[in-house]
Amino acid sequence: MTQTVALHHQVSGPEQDVPLVILHGLFGSADNWRSHVKQWQESRRVVVVDLRNHGRSPHAKTMTYQAMAGDIVALLDRLGIERCDLLGHSMGGKVAISVARLHPQRLASLIVADIAPVAYEHGHEVIFDAMRQVERDAPESRKQADAAMARHVETPAIRMFLATNLARGDDGVMHWRVGLDEIEAAYADIVAEPAGEGRYSGPTLVIRGSRSDYVDDALLPRVKEVLPEAQIRTLDAGHWLHAEAPEAFHESVDSFLAERG
View 1 (cartoon, helix red, strand yellow):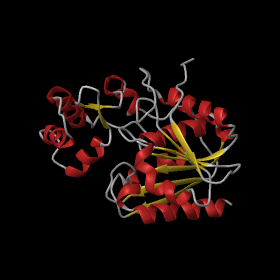
View 2: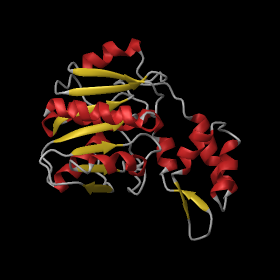
View 3: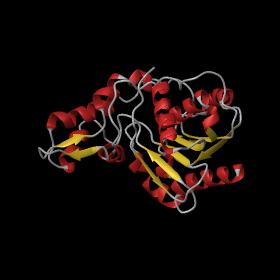
View 4: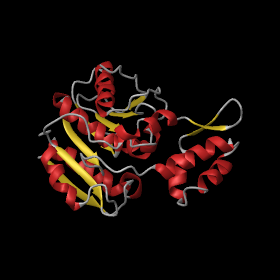
């Protein structure tokens, strides 16, 4: 059995039997969800997590979805949470689906943001190139790091997102806090299908972006095969729909949880 990682996490909001647990996507972190957490914590318990090799969590060689699902269950155990509403975006959505399939008794509901339970083609090579360029250039400022990334990534918003993973070291140089070596070595596992077999038949919401191809119409039959109770909500947004359409995303989650009671 793969050893679990003690994930860094933040807990806020009033005590609640069924909290909302949030999982970020590839190269993301709990910090990306700050504005949403600020709203949700006013009325409910929220646990926002840094997955292994991300944010402030420890680094580990293995990044299979079974291993990462194990991390989440171990965290729930440590926090004394029997059941939760589990929300995951992109890679975090695959982790959430894996928890749902492997440990359905731990979920009250599942919310998946812009990912389907399928294997995807490799598509982050340019991102890895940009991040390795930063390592080679050893920038001493975020501006210098952005210039290094710009040699490979044209879109400022993507560079800004990646820059949330930069931290200044004792040597004055900007370093990546993500486990870049581990992520790149395990990339085939990251683009693979979620762990587990069969269906998760609990209450489910799948939110997709109309300008994203991660959950296009052709993938909906597979979504329904694995998540037969899934409600499908489409927002006017791309893949980072929680950042691009925050109000609509928030309303989608709130209305779903309100319906579930």
